[in-house]
Length: 82
Image (cartoon, rainbow, N blue to C red; front, side, top):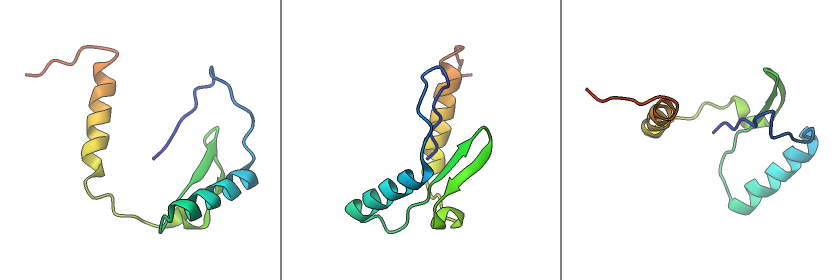
């Protein structure tokens, strides 16, 4: 899952080391078998964890992604079903 923070909201510069430590803690607490994360800033990869290069099957996730993309199209302009 990717998240984008709009510039107008503003945010403090992220500390990749601290983020990695926090992510490890969350991973341990939730007992997630494999967790991938990366930080991209201005189109440049600034941090990734060791499993960020692991390929994962996406199964039926594409249905959800498609639904979200369609809803994003609906918001700015009406989408007419034919």
